[in-house]
Amino acid sequence: MSTLRNELKIVTKGWWVAIVVATVVVIALTLGLVSGAMVLDRSHNVSAPEIILLVPMLLLSAVFFAAWLTVIGYIWGDAKRRKMRHVLWTLVAFFCPYGLGIVLYFVLRTPAPPTCTDCGAIGRAGFSFCAQCGAPLTPFCPKCNRPVERGWNACPHCGIRLAEASPTP
Image (cartoon, rainbow, N blue to C red; front, side, top):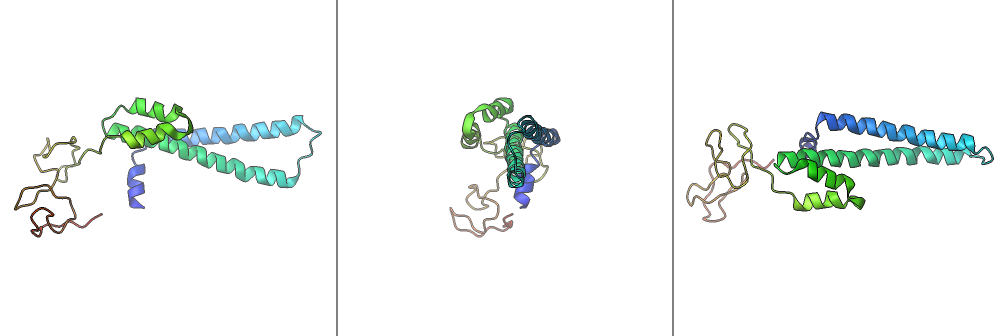
Protein backbone atom coordinates (compact mmCIF):
# COMPACT_ATOMS: atom_id res chain seq x y z
CA MET A 1 0.00 0.00 0.00
CA SER A 2 2.89 2.39 0.62
CA THR A 3 3.92 2.14 -3.04
CA LEU A 4 0.45 3.28 -4.10
CA ARG A 5 0.61 6.18 -1.65
CA ASN A 6 4.03 7.21 -2.95
CA GLU A 7 2.79 7.10 -6.53
CA LEU A 8 -0.36 9.08 -5.71
CA LYS A 9 1.82 11.84 -4.25
CA ILE A 10 2.65 12.64 -7.87
CA VAL A 11 -0.90 13.96 -8.32
CA THR A 12 -0.70 17.61 -7.30
CA LYS A 13 -3.03 19.31 -4.81
CA GLY A 14 -4.57 21.33 -7.62
CA TRP A 15 -5.59 18.11 -9.37
CA TRP A 16 -7.15 16.76 -6.17
CA VAL A 17 -9.20 19.95 -5.79
CA ALA A 18 -10.28 19.71 -9.44
CA ILE A 19 -11.26 16.06 -8.97
CA VAL A 20 -13.42 16.83 -5.95
CA VAL A 21 -15.06 19.87 -7.55
CA ALA A 22 -15.73 18.08 -10.85
CA THR A 23 -17.18 15.05 -9.07
CA VAL A 24 -19.51 17.22 -6.99
CA VAL A 25 -20.60 19.09 -10.13
CA VAL A 26 -21.32 15.82 -11.95
CA ILE A 27 -23.39 14.54 -9.01
CA ALA A 28 -25.30 17.84 -8.76
CA LEU A 29 -26.00 17.97 -12.50
CA THR A 30 -27.14 14.37 -12.59
CA LEU A 31 -29.42 14.85 -9.59
CA GLY A 32 -30.78 18.01 -11.16
CA LEU A 33 -31.48 16.31 -14.46
CA VAL A 34 -33.15 13.32 -12.81
CA SER A 35 -35.29 15.41 -10.47
CA GLY A 36 -36.18 17.81 -13.30
CA ALA A 37 -37.23 14.93 -15.53
CA MET A 38 -39.40 13.55 -12.74
CA VAL A 39 -41.09 16.91 -12.17
CA LEU A 40 -41.72 17.54 -15.87
CA ASP A 41 -43.06 14.06 -16.54
CA ARG A 42 -45.78 13.75 -13.91
CA SER A 43 -47.59 11.06 -15.86
CA HIS A 44 -44.76 8.62 -15.15
CA ASN A 45 -45.04 7.24 -11.67
CA VAL A 46 -41.59 6.70 -10.27
CA SER A 47 -41.59 3.93 -7.74
CA ALA A 48 -39.37 3.79 -4.68
CA PRO A 49 -37.26 0.87 -6.00
CA GLU A 50 -36.36 2.88 -9.11
CA ILE A 51 -35.14 5.76 -6.97
CA ILE A 52 -33.30 3.40 -4.64
CA LEU A 53 -31.48 1.89 -7.62
CA LEU A 54 -30.75 5.31 -9.06
CA VAL A 55 -28.71 6.51 -6.07
CA PRO A 56 -26.08 3.70 -6.10
CA MET A 57 -25.75 4.01 -9.87
CA LEU A 58 -25.17 7.73 -9.47
CA LEU A 59 -22.54 7.19 -6.77
CA LEU A 60 -20.83 4.47 -8.81
CA SER A 61 -20.63 6.72 -11.85
CA ALA A 62 -19.18 9.49 -9.66
CA VAL A 63 -16.53 7.10 -8.33
CA PHE A 64 -15.55 6.05 -11.87
CA PHE A 65 -15.42 9.68 -12.94
CA ALA A 66 -13.19 10.59 -9.98
CA ALA A 67 -10.92 7.59 -10.67
CA TRP A 68 -10.61 8.61 -14.32
CA LEU A 69 -9.67 12.17 -13.32
CA THR A 70 -7.15 10.77 -10.81
CA VAL A 71 -5.47 8.77 -13.58
CA ILE A 72 -5.35 11.88 -15.77
CA GLY A 73 -3.77 13.82 -12.88
CA TYR A 74 -1.29 11.00 -12.33
CA ILE A 75 -0.31 11.11 -16.00
CA TRP A 76 0.29 14.87 -15.68
CA GLY A 77 2.60 14.48 -12.69
CA ASP A 78 4.32 11.30 -13.88
CA ALA A 79 5.07 12.71 -17.34
CA LYS A 80 6.42 15.87 -15.73
CA ARG A 81 8.62 13.79 -13.41
CA ARG A 82 9.95 11.78 -16.35
CA LYS A 83 10.76 14.99 -18.27
CA MET A 84 8.21 14.16 -20.97
CA ARG A 85 5.76 16.53 -22.63
CA HIS A 86 3.26 16.43 -19.79
CA VAL A 87 0.66 18.75 -21.34
CA LEU A 88 0.59 16.76 -24.57
CA TRP A 89 0.30 13.39 -22.80
CA THR A 90 -2.44 14.71 -20.50
CA LEU A 91 -4.44 15.95 -23.49
CA VAL A 92 -3.94 12.64 -25.33
CA ALA A 93 -5.11 10.70 -22.27
CA PHE A 94 -8.07 13.03 -21.76
CA PHE A 95 -9.38 13.17 -25.33
CA CYS A 96 -8.63 9.70 -26.75
CA PRO A 97 -11.78 7.60 -26.49
CA TYR A 98 -12.17 4.34 -24.57
CA GLY A 99 -9.05 4.94 -22.48
CA LEU A 100 -6.73 4.44 -25.45
CA GLY A 101 -4.74 7.55 -24.56
CA ILE A 102 -4.17 6.24 -21.05
CA VAL A 103 -3.02 2.86 -22.37
CA LEU A 104 -0.75 4.60 -24.91
CA TYR A 105 0.86 6.66 -22.18
CA PHE A 106 1.66 3.69 -19.98
CA VAL A 107 3.03 1.69 -22.93
CA LEU A 108 5.15 4.49 -24.42
CA ARG A 109 6.40 6.39 -21.37
CA THR A 110 10.12 6.73 -20.79
CA PRO A 111 11.80 4.96 -17.85
CA ALA A 112 11.73 6.75 -14.52
CA PRO A 113 14.85 8.82 -13.84
CA PRO A 114 17.13 7.51 -11.10
CA THR A 115 17.25 9.30 -7.76
CA CYS A 116 20.53 9.84 -5.92
CA THR A 117 20.58 8.01 -2.61
CA ASP A 118 23.02 10.52 -1.10
CA CYS A 119 21.58 13.94 -1.96
CA GLY A 120 18.13 13.07 -3.36
CA ALA A 121 18.69 14.84 -6.70
CA ILE A 122 16.92 13.40 -9.73
CA GLY A 123 19.33 12.26 -12.42
CA ARG A 124 18.79 11.53 -16.07
CA ALA A 125 18.41 8.14 -17.68
CA GLY A 126 21.81 6.81 -18.71
CA PHE A 127 23.78 8.77 -16.12
CA SER A 128 25.98 6.58 -13.93
CA PHE A 129 26.80 9.27 -11.36
CA CYS A 130 24.88 12.11 -9.73
CA ALA A 131 25.49 15.51 -11.33
CA GLN A 132 25.08 17.24 -7.95
CA CYS A 133 27.29 15.24 -5.57
CA GLY A 134 29.09 12.69 -7.75
CA ALA A 135 27.73 9.64 -5.95
CA PRO A 136 26.96 6.57 -8.08
CA LEU A 137 23.31 6.40 -9.15
CA THR A 138 23.50 2.66 -9.68
CA PRO A 139 25.54 0.40 -7.41
CA PHE A 140 28.44 -1.51 -8.94
CA CYS A 141 30.02 -4.84 -8.05
CA PRO A 142 33.32 -4.22 -6.20
CA LYS A 143 35.04 -7.06 -8.09
CA CYS A 144 33.91 -6.83 -11.73
CA ASN A 145 32.56 -3.20 -11.72
CA ARG A 146 29.37 -4.21 -13.48
CA PRO A 147 26.07 -2.65 -12.38
CA VAL A 148 24.01 -4.51 -9.81
CA GLU A 149 20.60 -3.71 -8.39
CA ARG A 150 19.88 -2.69 -4.84
CA GLY A 151 18.73 -5.61 -2.76
CA TRP A 152 20.89 -8.20 -4.50
CA ASN A 153 22.97 -10.37 -2.18
CA ALA A 154 25.40 -11.56 -4.86
CA CYS A 155 26.68 -10.29 -8.21
CA PRO A 156 25.08 -12.27 -11.06
CA HIS A 157 28.16 -11.69 -13.25
CA CYS A 158 31.03 -12.88 -11.04
CA GLY A 159 29.21 -14.49 -8.10
CA ILE A 160 30.87 -12.50 -5.31
CA ARG A 161 28.76 -11.76 -2.24
CA LEU A 162 27.90 -8.09 -2.05
CA ALA A 163 28.93 -6.43 1.20
CA GLU A 164 26.12 -3.89 1.48
CA ALA A 165 23.02 -5.78 0.41
CA SER A 166 20.18 -3.38 0.99
CA PRO A 167 16.80 -4.99 1.73
CA THR A 168 14.21 -4.75 -1.00
CA PRO A 169 11.49 -2.18 -0.29
